[in-house]
Structure formats: structure tokens, C-alpha cells
Image (tube, rainbow, N blue to C red; front, side, top):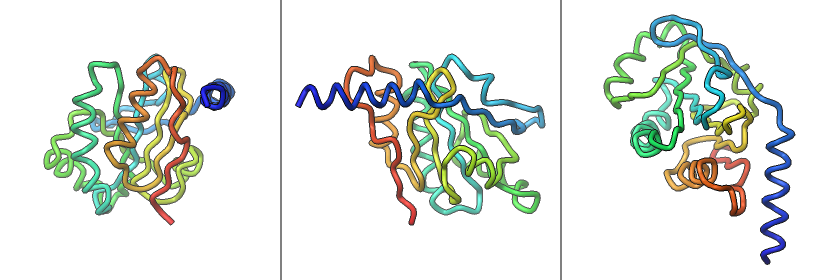
Length: 171
């Protein structure tokens, strides 16, 4: 059994090491251009959401809580909004309602989701290692234990088996 877990870990690390670094360029809340590559050196939770998305509204309080818990371990949380020009005016109200204290980026599109292998629905979350490579994805509304498992692995010694690479909660 230990050999099987070691082999799974070795395969996961090899896959992560061979995975390309990802990048997207969006705008922060002040309109300044921001890039994912500027966060290299720290693990990143990149959550795609929209104000009109009910599962996103249900998920955000959990992400806010986990960001507070993991900030001390160097994890950066980014909320990338898919709101368009018709709904983007609701972003400040959403951020205030859920007391989002981490970076909120605007201008994300379905193309960004597709390029990062996150499907076509929100919410969708990518977990990036400190080198900017996606090591795990959650498609659909994440559960706290799924996020914790991935963050504990990313911020730990990675001695145990890697978490499931893709968790899918959407059809």
C-alpha cells in the first residue's frame, strides 16, 4: 500500500512539474491590469464567479473564511469575476455583502475558464503551486473539506498522496 501511495505521489509531482505555467491578465477593482504570473512564489486559489450565480453566492462566505485561515501560510486568494458590463455594477455590493478581503479581478471570460481547463460554468476554482502551475481544479461549488485538502497539500511537505486533480460538481 505504501508503494502505491508513493507511486501516486511521484506521478502527481511529475505531472505538476511538467504542467505549463498558466497566466491570465485581468483588471483589479481600480482598473489596473493584473496578471496571475505576478503572484508566483506563493500558492494561489483562483476562483471564478459572478454576482448572478447562486452557487457562487453560496460558496463565497466559505472562501472568505478559508482565506483568513490560510493567509498566514502564504496562500493568495483571487476572485475572478465573469460579470459583464450589465452586471459588473453589482460587484462592489457583492464584495461588501460577503466581506471579501482578498483581490477581486474583473473581466474574466468563458475563454479564460476554457484555457485553464475549468469547464464552462461558474463557480470554478483552480489551485496553483508557487511556480504558477495548476495542480488541482474544482468544477462547480467547492466544499470546505475539498479546499482544505488541496491547500494543506500545497502548503505542506507533500509527503502524502496528492489530492484528486479534478473534482466535478457540475454535469
